[in-house]
Image 1: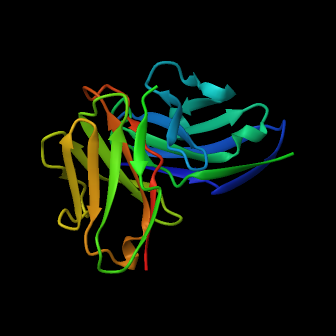
Image 2 (image 1 turned 90 degrees about the vertical axis):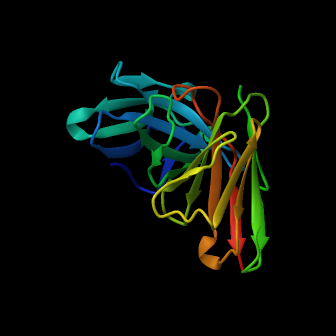
Length: 114
Length: 116
């Protein structure tokens, strides 16, 4: 069985500040981990994914995430927030590297203040 | 890129009625589609997996007679919530992939269902 916990349902950051979204997972098999972003009235878009290659994964829009097996974490970061980063972010785990049959966290809504 | 369109984006229906949600792949052939739902303040949960031309496979705890899934073509899957009740109010979202299990699935924009 797999599960994901996202700490914080809402995060508020100032424009230009660091964005840090926390994700912890539980999995009985080696996990594949994903971060998705959902902008208002749009579908989920894949930001990045960990598929057992490099533990530091770089994604689109300047985001990156680090897989830490010892901490069962896959936190998402971006050094400098833009107004366009305001969205909801979902962490997910799958037994498939392609991200099929995903188990999602509860989501974190990011608000960017000017 | 691959586009998945879901319709409607929002729907309100009366208790006891049925509502159909469509999920279309616009620029690829979706051999497999996934349906998820998200209750307020909860995670997105996988409801079922459908392969074109086959019966859907439902996750544990999801009533197949209540949530009817049809995937009769390579570009369209539908989810029908039958005899809807207020507790079915939720955010429903589909994803679709082409080809094998190693192919990425793309998401629709979701449907907000409110049953009154």
